[in-house]
Image (cartoon, rainbow, N blue to C red; front, side, top):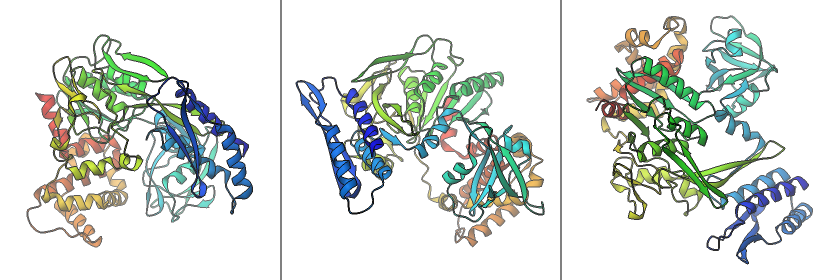
Amino acid sequence: MGSFLQRSEKILRYICIMERKNNPYLPIWFALILIGGILLGVVVARRNGGMVFRQSDEKLSRIMKYIHDNYVDTVSGAVLEEKAINGLLEKLDPHSVYITAEEFHEANDPLAGNFEGIGVQFRMERDTITVINPVPGGPSEKLGIRSGDRIVKIEGKNVAGVKMNTTEVMRRLKGPKGTEVDISIFRRGAGGLLNFTITRDVIPTYSMDIAYMVKPGIGYIRLNNFSATTHEEVYNALVQLKESGMKNLILDLRSNGGGYLNAAIEVAGEFLSGKTLIVYTEGMHHDKEVFRSEGNGIFERGKLVVMIDEGSASASEIVAGAVQDNDRGTIVGRRSFGKGLVQEQLNFKDGSALRLTVARYYTPTGRCIQRSYKDGLDAYNNDYMHRFLDGELENPDSIKFPDSLKYKTPGGKTVYGGGGIMPDLYIPIENDSSLRYYNICVNKGLVYQWAFDYTDRNRAHLQQYKDIDRFDRTFSINDGLYQEFIRYTETKGVKRPKGNLQKSDHYLRTLIKAYIARNILDNEGFYPILNTIDPAIQKAIEEANR
């Protein structure tokens, strides 16, 4: 009971500090939702021009003791604590969150640039942990663990055929550097289980999916987040691409949910000359902080195309906003997510943490692109569905920005705030009735599954392909293989319709080939093939060629 009160009071004091300065126009009501529908109201009121909590410590202590002593059933202090804190934060904004100790590493490891574990990419295939690829140089690869291996036991306990989510698998395989974990593996043709004792190590993670020359003179970089290592990854990729003859660049930030603010600033700085404004942050209790480029960017010249969509958020929007507001490049795609709030993290001794919104960020023209959350958390989280139903994903005409949110770039271009970054060149989602068979096969996961099974059966033959160039030139989904795939879809209840399906068949053949390439060459095999049927990529290439 004491730990809950101490932590709740620490959070309340932290938030109180953030809200203490004069603000007579924005009184905030904090509601703590307690178990069984019990509502703990912590009221923020104005008093002598300042804001104070009314007897919050006394209320917390009395209510918690009353529940503990009198509630009809046994009460879990940990569950009560989590519900109370989450209830409090839900009344603030969508991005102020409480992270439990169990969730902490899952939330932070992707941004840290590394984690400690055995070093394998895996997927649950038919309730079995299947190794997709061992991490190069990691402890699993060094011991000889291969793509296609099935992990059937961990520490002597059977994990094959057991319904287990990815989080539980990660919990069992991760661990401090230097610790050991025993696993048993089934490998085709091995004649029994293979036993390994793996010493965990630091495993690098990468925020860059791929960097390659998509066309002569045009480089392509795809980022999945902005982590501690993103700037170094991007810098090294730019050096290599320039050595390969890159004159223009496509930076793909689609579905990139963001990450570290500093990583976004450093990446944007590679494209901007001089001391150019990138972004500034400001909050009631945080003075205005301005971030500019250093003036030594590696790609200050050359055509720049930045790709975004409704999944591009936060740090992605900072980069896109800096490029757009400074007339540095062309933004291609669809309206971005719309997250313009900055969080700070408060850590607790038990490994949990609080991320509290403390400021807003503003693009160089002065616009805040945070979309409204006045209609509540559910409406905020369902924004994609609203965009789909409103027709925005197929046509941008449904987007209406008030004149008060219009801004002008130095070059005279009109840009908008209040709801994400609007692209300069809009690319709708592909809505072609002739692709129905393709879409059904993709949505049901049939393409991935067939490609995985094919790779698994033919892994020895496919190992001859050591690079994407040779694979792309010499491997094809011929008519025999494609008919095999069609028969497979029929066994899964999806029959290929009659009629002109030339485009659908082409897309399916290409995607099958891309997945097989991923299974043996990872992303270096996947994206160069997939991008040939991506309409948005093709438009970006056209723009980069102008």
